[in-house]
Image: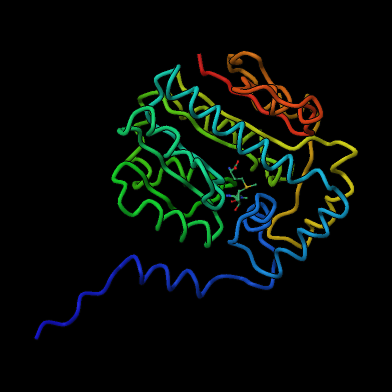
Length: 273
Ligand SMILES: C[S@@+](CC[C@H](N)C(=O)[O-])C[C@H]1O[C@@H](n2cnc3c(N)ncnc32)[C@H](O)[C@@H]1O
């Protein structure tokens, strides 16, 4: 009798699960908790609850960020004809993930998800198992050249064609000493003219600053930045209207209660000329 075939995906997932660090709060799983997800553990909830005690607005920011990401992806696929997306700092799957939003516009849209959290990858690979135009792989934004040179990424994304690179809710996990502006410049340099960069980032604001200390014991510290600093990530690009604004103000698709408009986080989209 033939030996039973081993499932390579299950093998990889088991290996990744063994690497899961359950003693350190994960910023990906904390974000999942803010969004009402179930993919988080006691260690994450305990740290996230401390954040929420100090900054009760955080779930509103998280939801506004997700909504911004969805609107930006839909805009790029529908209005700008973008057919390939590189989403770095993917997060755990929730409603309306990037490939679902973009492939509703055109099922041929290709998406690569990159994250440095093992649980994100397990979930993304499971979600994408039957989707031939998508890929989820481990990578670190602090090493952008490794993402750009990865043969698996290059197998899906053709950098000679316009691409949208998504850096949503991730740059505030890159401290200045890791050179976030240099990282963005490396990515932009690799993008063809007509490509887009999408950035969202939490603001250095009195409603959020009391909570930053809690992140010091999480998988990544958090660095809040000012509007000028956040807009600086889109330097050299043509800003898509309305520019870099509070997240709910970026091309809203429905009326918003006014108390939900001033969310202390900015988003913007830039086009490479
Ligand atoms: C707040 S979530 C944002 C998820 C999604 N982009 C969104 O906007 O809804 C941040 C994600 O970035 C990932 N992340 C943080 N630092 C990273 C790094 N240096 N490289 C790759 N991913 C990172 C985390 O694991 C997490 O999944």
